[in-house]
Image (cartoon, rainbow, N blue to C red):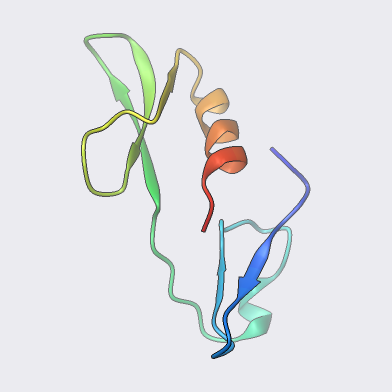
Length: 78
């Protein structure tokens, strides 16, 4: 996992980011958390898959769940 966090603020003051505990986001105010992806194990291929929160298109897959989490951290842009 990365030790960096990117937080984007819009002109209304709302923030978007890939959630991490590097920054105490609750210190900024009330949170609304929504998943961008989900990571599931596919029994047929015997691999972990990164999928969009809604949909079945595989974004990335690996035998390693940790590698999928790292891919998510590196590639999912808020």
